[in-house]
Image 1 (cartoon, rainbow, N blue to C red):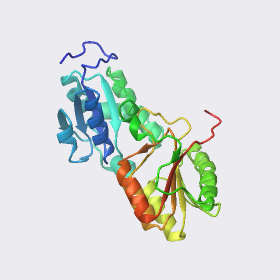
Image 2: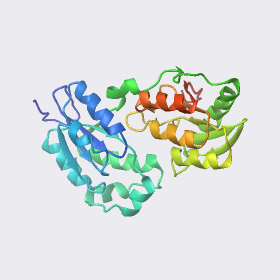
Image 3: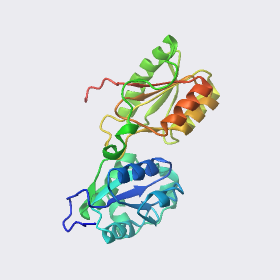
Image 4: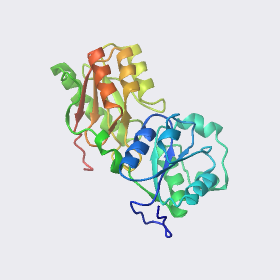
Length: 283
């Protein structure tokens, strides 16, 4: 394998670095990158999916706050392109993490606790260390749905009306960087996602009303390299338990994990799943 001797350049022979959080998305990224002919050096920062070790060429478990150790692990194997994948439970992580000198440098740049602020500061440290932040979608484009009905049944007229309303509401909420999902019933917002995450919001909505429709979109300037919204089997499970009837995601700007499981779960719970285009002033 040929390794690179200058930062910022990648070739098919260069290994790709994967910084992995929780969930199955890092596994999907690793498997797909290897299918594209790339060797994968994985650094698991949160004790993620046990499958990661088996699907990576090289695997490290490094605490989230040890950015220096993460950087050295990637340099050891000639990595220049980094991919980020997986969920980070922001509030518990911030409370419990111990920061090394590199992480302290990032922390000094963070003006607030918004996801974009925290990620931006961390990524700046990696870029200053000579790494290029690559795009997940280069390897997992097959997980990004095109517009259309994804489930076995299409939404009813009532559900479609709530989906259209939800797309408008969710786009406004995302623009304010509050959350990316809303639950709607009969044109009224039942719940809005905040720091608790989509699945917890869905359960809260189910405690307030039966028959909600959930819509999830991206933020207007969300970085598609590493920060697209994700839905998967856990989302469908939460929606089923909440007695919801439909789920809509933003076409071309969302990741649908384990599609076969999602479709099977939707069929079992009689839930409609669609991908819709969100009209945006910024588009």
